[in-house]
Image (cartoon, rainbow, N blue to C red; front, side):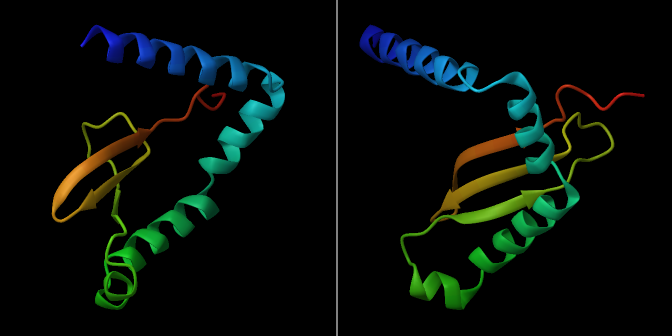
Length: 102
């Protein structure tokens, strides 16, 4: 059990170091592009396509993406759940950070 914890810490620190090697302005711009209405539309379309019978027939081992819009009490802008065989494997919730200036 402790080995997984150590590996997870090493992986997190390696990812953090890699991301921090990119200038802050470029990281923030990448985040703005990812959170853009255009990208969210593409992700929503991709999620819908991944659930079709045609797609599942062509790619049976592929994950199905669920695009999640926030509810009234949620504090995220959108979410993506990846599932296979009806079981959720990975859930992501995306919030704008830093927040847009008021």
